[in-house]
Length: 143
Image (cartoon, rainbow, N blue to C red):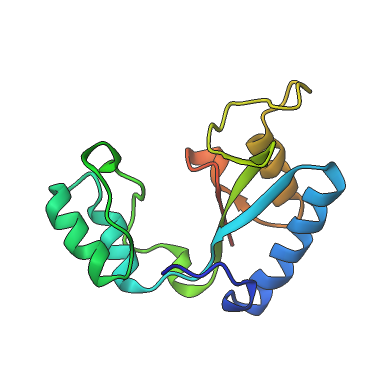
């Protein structure tokens, strides 16, 4: 299973993730880290999604210790086999609203005119991270 532990990140990324978490706390945006380090078998399975039949994808996911997905979930979720997750130089988050994970990158749940994932991107960039929001992967942050 993919790691959520900040200790699996590089020392530099651990510092930036902690700074990011403090910034999120200061703004009142609730979130969780959903993924830090990723092993190669996981990356292979993720890369296969949307590119291979769901049966093939699920075989790869089983090898990686990931749960099976259905036909509707078999969509492209990563654009590269060279993910910075593989080297501990990336993490993914999920915004929490009313106790539920929110994946909609455009949703402005607090009504301040700025979507929460964009606010997270601004916080991430302020601590020296590259924000996936800027390139179509809102939950992703990397160095």
